[in-house]
Image (cartoon, rainbow, N blue to C red; front, side, top):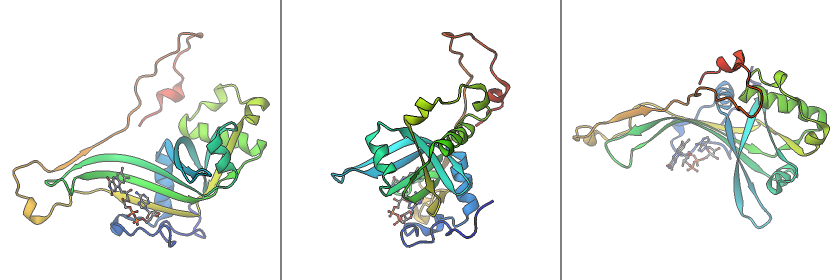
Length: 220
Ligand SMILES: Cc1cc2nc3c(=O)[nH]c(=O)nc-3n(C[C@H](O)[C@H](O)[C@H](O)COP(=O)(O)OP(=O)(O)OC[C@H]3O[C@@H](n4cnc5c(N)ncnc54)[C@H](O)[C@@H]3O)c2cc1C
């Protein structure tokens, strides 16, 4: 259930979509749905020299925050842990748009952006958050595998970024061709893109077990 006390996506001066604002979606339920559908987020951080970096990370939404983790040895994760401003994006690529002109050729997508500063979770909250991330990426897996040891937890920074200042942009529909281009002798339309899980491949270095039922149930 979306928290209606929090700002709607795209409702702050920094997150108001100016470029093609009709693609902006102000519904927090859609923000949640985009974040829940993705597996990878890109997290930006700028170092002391002003050089921006963008880190791809595994993540999960937990209510009104996004959880992600990295090594305590990571310079960029330590900057995020120090509360450096960040921007996290999740992009779902839904198709290629083949317009009759180069200018209008584009993509179908659902994208979410979150601005703010991440907080470091303490050890107990960190372990719960790691389970939440695992449940998002690998539903059913956590109870089968060895949980993190104290030493492994100590080597892991688990961060939470609040879904306070956010935006959502969704692009769909037919190509936005100008009327004078519609009759050009070229195919126009879009080609959907679907992400798909393949057949599980066992690691024969250890004992080979049947593929778990929860893995068989994964679809995408
Ligand atoms: C898969 C994909 C491919 C794209 N390819 C291109 C491309 O090739 N060229 C191009 O110009 N644009 C592309 N876009 C759109 C691009 O992400 C920007 O929305 C666009 O460039 C406008 O940027 P701006 O800074 O002028 O936006 P503004 O409207 O000025 O941005 C204002 C605020 O709107 C929000 N916002 C802007 N873009 C997004 C977004 N994508 N998702 C969520 N919130 C957003 C942010 O909060 C931002 O601070 C692509 C988007 C996706 C998801």
